[in-house]
Length: 77
Image (cartoon, rainbow, N blue to C red; front, side):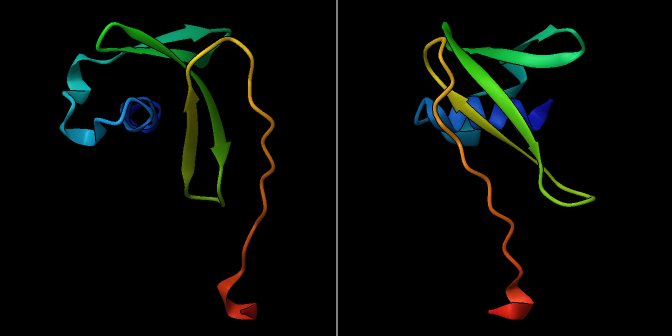
C-alpha cells in the first residue's frame, strides 16, 4: 500500500514528507482503487515492474490517462 500512497503524495506535489501514514487507501475487488490524501482523492493504477518490484501511477479525476509501459534492459543499452 505504501507504493500507492507515495504515488498519491507525489502527484499532490508533496512527496514522502506529506504524512504518508495519514493517507487512506480505498480498495475495490481486492485492488487499491484510490488514495485519499490531504482531502483529495487520487486514482491509482499499480504495475508490476519485474518479479520483485511494484510501481503505481496516481492522478486526479475519474478517467485513467493513456499509459504505455515499456521494459528497459540496461544490459542491452
